[in-house]
Amino acid sequence: MPASAPLNPEPSMSDERNKQHLPLKSYANAAEQGLENGMTPEKSTPEMYAGQGEDAAPRIPMRNMHKKSGSLRMNGHSKDKSSTVIIERFHDEDGEHLVSLRQGWDSERNKPLAARRRNSELLSGRKAGARWERSHLHFAPLSVPLKRRLQTLLVLAHTLSIAGLLAVFFFLCSIPLLWPILFPYLIYILFSDAGRSGSLSHRSNFLRALPIWSLFASYFPARLYRSEPLTPTRKYIFGYHPHGIISHGAFAAFATEALGFSQLFPGITNTLLTLESNFRVPLYRDYALAMGLGSVSRESCENLLSRGGPNGEGMGRAITIVVGGARESLDAQPHSLKLVLKRRKGFVKLAIRTGADLVPTLAFGENELYDQVQPEQHPLIHKMQLVVKKILGFTVPLFHARGVFNYDVGLMPYRRPVNVVVGRPIKLQQARKPEEGYVDEIHDLYVKELERIWEEWKDEFARERMGELEIVE
Image 1: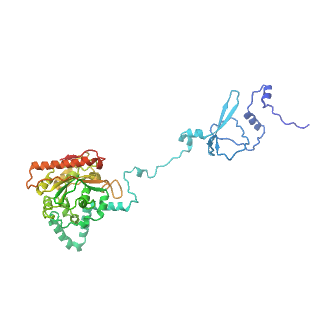
Image 2: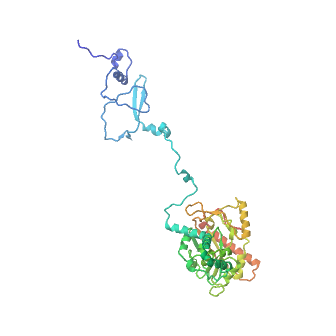
Image 3: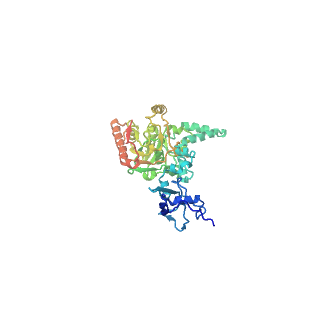
């Protein structure tokens, strides 16, 4: 008798299980029990799911379904081979298992980055170059146009002109063969009065009009403006305000033709005045005389305004005085304008004695070219500077700006606009001995003209101001 096939002692059909009073059995449990009894599914290597939501419950074998390769979307989402398949299981009251599949991007997107990375978090070392990013020192790029390099070179040469030419002189002194020339030269400059004679014999209009000075002025850039034309048959005293640190605006406007002084004021020969001691510095005094500079001494001013010109009495001559002087340089703070002018009346008396008209001039931006130690924060340093000013006649402000190759530290001025506005001339009557009342009257007119220039042009040229014009001392 042939052997019969083994029967399943526990039926799987629901009718047969009801007859034997057995509970209903799910398809998933029957399939799992069939595997334990040696039954194999149609697919030899069943495809298993892995992902979140998986537990120890029996798996449902996958059907050998035909896979469509043409579609790239599934349930409105693009297929992502790297996405995680999540198995969700549900149980009802009869013990039936419902299994649902969904892509894992829904829950992964809602999870924070730390939860998604779990234990695969990377630990990074310090960021290379972070200290340079936080540094207050910013270097200039290598790809700087040639024009800007030449501008920087010209301003650097002017800023260091005294120290540079003095260093050249000492170098020449180290050559014994030049001693027979240098020794008489030193004797000559000690007794020379070329800086105060008023003859302007060393003045070189060719040097003043060289194109290199346009590069100097365009560094900031600087501009010169006039309120009204000046008659070349009279003589003038330009009062330049403020002094700033080095008065770059005054040099560009009145010591060179870079800003077109001769075109704005034709027929007028202007001389920028500086300290008498500068004409005792070897080599630099020759450079200053060639640029048409003169001494600010009383003798020099009177000679310049009473000699030369078409009539030989100074007609068409003009001088530029930085009225505030070294004392005003100590108040040269960015975005502020303090003028040392209340007790400065010597230039008014000079104008009355020589019959020269006064021309107030205000340079917007001159104080913005440098930063310096503030007197309020360092009162002791400020007092020492005033003592030096009283003893030596000049002082050295503790200032800084930018460098040649960086934008934060150095003696080079900042690239900030300087707008020199020439006001309306104040005509006066000549008198050998000026009366105090008349001097005060002219002085008040001079101050009012400066205030007019400030009020009229401050919104155009001083937009970042932190205060108004102040007349001090």
